[in-house]
Image 1: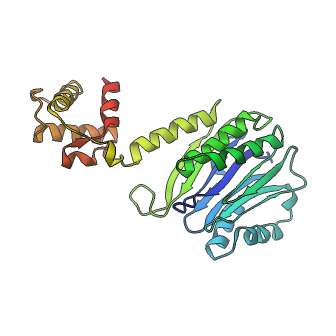
Image 2: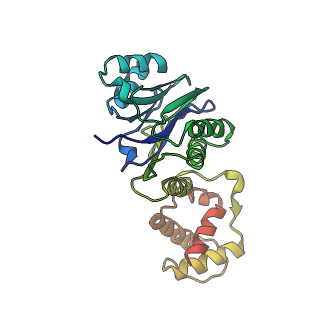
Image 3: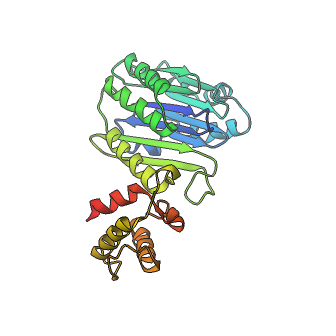
Length: 289
């Protein structure tokens, strides 16, 4: 069975309780194996000779109240191949734990810090996990971006000595999914790519644009000049047939909403009721001309 040669981070954001995993590997579709997370429970990264059951079983144990270290002990106790496993866990309270089996392929190891654990196997050396930990501790922003920065630092420090192929980023947040009825806040995968971390960074940028409500402080009034520009761009795209007179009236509003429906801009256009628009929408439309 192929070894999931991997470096990963499991972490909790103390500001809002987000729980997540980020991982890169010289392994096809690593996101289908390594990352597991559940709001209110914890996050698990299972790798090396990966035992996928560590994901759902570990989350179930932490959801039932076990700490990360208690969960790790239970998982390993029931696994005859524990010395070939590598796993990192963080629970909903931010307690972290990790295990690197003695039979994992060199270099293999981990580092546990406050609210996170980083781990890897078949790496260029210990410097990979050290760079990941230091970068995560110093990074700012949301958990997804901090974990992605840690991955990039690990790669810059040498990463997986066999190369790179896939990466994944998963963040669980209560009610954070599309529609608000699930915890799958961020679930992005790069299954086969020569630069998987860079591609993952591109995808998280798109995720933030399409699925994150705009900062209200950045919205701008739809002035006559902006309304005229919108009318022109909407007419060119085939959504508007009226004059470019700078009046943001019902016809223009309807055309913009139709355009937004096709381009998946509904989240970004929620401010139209107040005659405000997101500058990122304007930039998007200008690029599309």
